[in-house]
Length: 105
Image 1 (cartoon, helix red, strand yellow):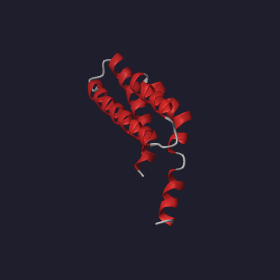
Image 2 (cartoon, rainbow, N blue to C red):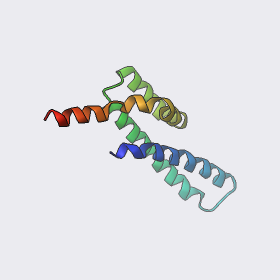
Image 3 (tube, rainbow, N blue to C red):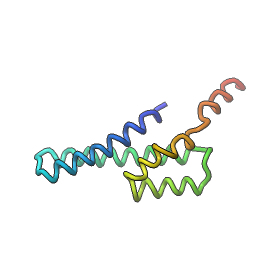
Image 4 (cartoon, one colour):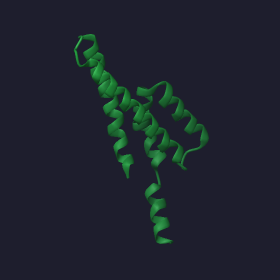
């Protein structure tokens, strides 16, 4: 349900950090506030993404470890790769599983 907002949150974190870097370089007075918001967006995105990965039954433990390392150590690149290549595999089949349980209950 809420997982549809994860890509938006990840993109907002990336864009916020880019704007923060520009604002800090140009000595804007509001740069520190934007930096705080960008850090909060990054933390929420990482936690949410890790929850989505670890709840998935469609990927094995080695792929879960790979996404964990990507989210924690190369966050921006990890977000982009996850959105471009991995997210469909991680969340694949959830609606099918939910429909199966609803029809067989």
